[in-house]
Length: 146
Image 1 (spheres, rainbow, N blue to C red):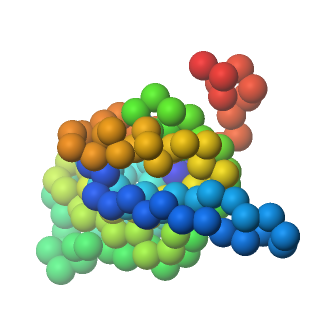
Image 2: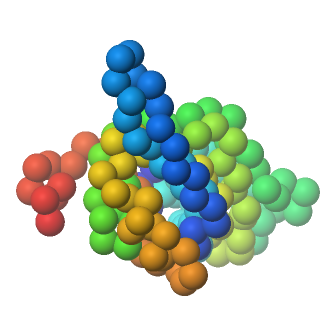
């Protein structure tokens, strides 16, 4: 399960359009560094990460940093600086930098379709760390509207 609530630095923002049949829709690619994520929260990106790469609270193999996740995570719910967006994908190639105490910094590229002015919101957050939540689980309508 990829279920993360942490601080993040927005590294890059790519605003573009996509063709969906006859329809052209806005899309945003956001590269961000998730900071101090507990490794058990990113198990769908790298299963058994704690068992494979830690001895106690220390990273067991210094040469593993960064790990690169080869698969795409689809249909996630993402909140960036209080703005909620459903149906996001994390592109393949996420980089996991292991830290002591079973924490990691994770560089992800999030693809958002039908951005609903998300780009302008994210641009306001580029200078500082912001709060980010990413959920792989389905949220209820009440949670989505909070």
